[in-house]
Length: 557
Image (cartoon, rainbow, N blue to C red; front, side, top):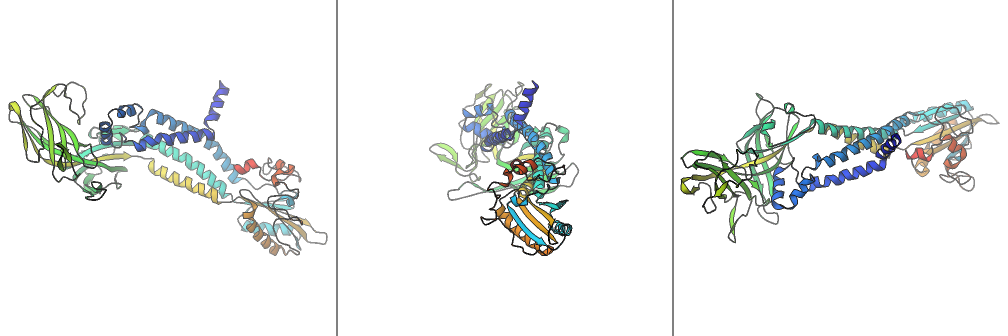
């Protein structure tokens, strides 16, 4: 069993599994972008149900209207978190070690490296090594010296970039988890002239994080003073919205000073670290209902939900449970710009140029005391009977006289409503910082080059010393590193007072070695002494025959 558990953990934390889970996460996010989401725009979800009555229930069974809160999406995310954590954490330690390690010992036979330069210096071997070490240190190389040799390496920032990328990736996962645990999302439909406080009971929908309670909500309040909308009036985009403006008044907490804000699309209100977005709007016809006893039993706006985006023709219901002798209910449509198309009422434009309502009247028992919750946008007609009132367009100020002395309904006008998305995500800023850090680390790891140079100096027969200088590019071909190596060779030659210097470069068939090749015509890492040295840790005891050049596995890491 333990062996199977280890095998399963290795499979889960492999890079292949992480990539597969990342692909599944991206694939699972597609419905969340294509279909309306309950936690973002519930009105759009209702419109989708009305437009696709057969398909919508099947989509709801798979939580496709609440993708990011679905159990299957959470399972993919948690598995991806475990996979990346198990993959990234060990690599982070390896990257941290690689960023701190010293250059390897200088190979005994430098002529086997791709770039080699030999020069004669009048300085003694120790003096030549000391002068070369100072020059390389001044060039920001990390220098390691030994008996008769120097090893220097530059480009350790590449490993720091890799380390930053991996740490930022972990921080990004933690930040996203913070948002899911301590954040919340809510929706509120707000009619012009009304206000609400940020409490659970005042919100239409509330989706808290795992560790969020009602007491954690910020105590702000918002009032909608007015709303205005402009639409394209001609051309192929006729009826499309041009601008939405919602004039808000808000208080960050009870007793605080009242502030004003012009809420627009993609310009959210930020109050107490909570962002309030404008995501929709519509019309709320205002009705006054008088029952059979002459009492005004209802007087106020009723939000109607748009069913046609381009014309804002909207549907809604009016419930009057206090009417006597029977409860009353009305269902119908609101038409901003009423037109008659072949005997059927429609709206020609979303702006209220000829507003009217058309209602079907019912009386009986609304069923609101049955204990079964009802939608405010639907009318349960099981206990109702339809009244003999012919539906007709009703402009503002006109009334419907109900039969049998059951009262009247007057359409007194309309107001506009807006739909607000309220979002609190404490992990949003940390996630942004982590994403920027990950991108910066990735760029550093791509742009910075790791390269090594080696130098050996031995006493010459006639005095002075013979200096052999070689270079190796760890992360790219030697052609790119060649120019830098040539400049270093020239500077070293001048500093050492070298005579008979023939120039640095790659040897051809007359004695020079082609780039990336040794005199035998093979890759520098193909020699036995190279392979042996690639497994030797820096600072470990080695023989002079050892050559410490990174193996191909090290290069990939």
